[in-house]
Length: 113
Length: 113
Image 1 (cartoon, each protein chain N blue to C red):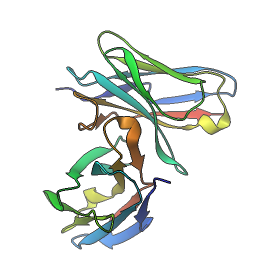
Image 2 (image 1 turned 90 degrees about the horizontal axis):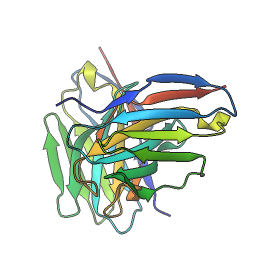
Image 3 (image 1 turned 30 degrees about the horizontal axis):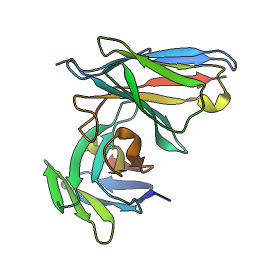
Image 4 (image 1 turned 135 degrees about the horizontal axis):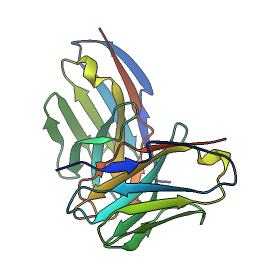
């Protein structure tokens, strides 16, 4: 089976812009989670989607949003970008959600100038 | 406050040597503990997942131990290889749901020839 894929791999934006990141989970997996990783904070949970519904949400402002399509592919959107949004954004897929094993994608490196 | 602390922050060892990474947590209630390996520029890859009733689990040259009484875990790497150079992240789960994962900031390991 193909692994989790994320596009684009690298992105440079300026403050105030918005960005959309995409994640394709492993075939058959219905749970997709998104994480932000920065050197200072480590990995932080953004949200999780399961069968097109947001099931869980972390402590991030409303500028961070997401959605999941019927084929389980997921997108994450960040509006009004701030310098502090510069990070590696990872998505992970799981067949069961909950405490099941997660498989991470390679991430999208976002730089906000 | 639920926290996961890892030590050391970074470590350099010679190829072929063994090493042990530490993880102390104050998470409660505890569901399971995971160790991930993250190569530079890539997403984390799961090494082990342990519930509170397990005190050791191996994955090849990687052996994780868990002491639920003292809330400590360790990851032992045997006969290190250059490919072991990576960050190792300890993650503790409060319960079901990925929003309940508490991440450590990781130990960066460099295996030198």
